[in-house]
Length: 105
Image (cartoon, rainbow, N blue to C red):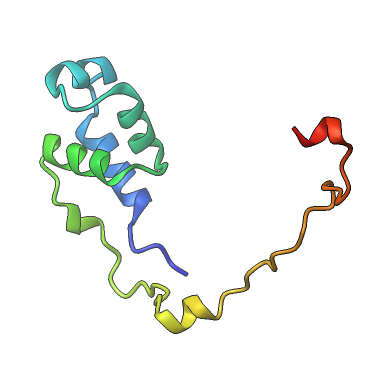
């Protein structure tokens, strides 16, 4: 399934907005940001929604600009949840039914 978020475009936009500004200067300018968050954003890695929104606010970006139109997402319904495979409950192999009295305590 396609990701509805365009990471590469977001990373390119962040790199462009911070061009000429060091990561430490950006953190000093916007206290809500941190070095790891900026580095992950520039590299196009996963961000939490809070980090994404903090970056958008600090860099004056519109979050919905990075949404991919037409990306299909898997629908989760009660029927699909009930049809998921479940491991059967069985006794553990390491458990012995007749344990010595010293181990029973």
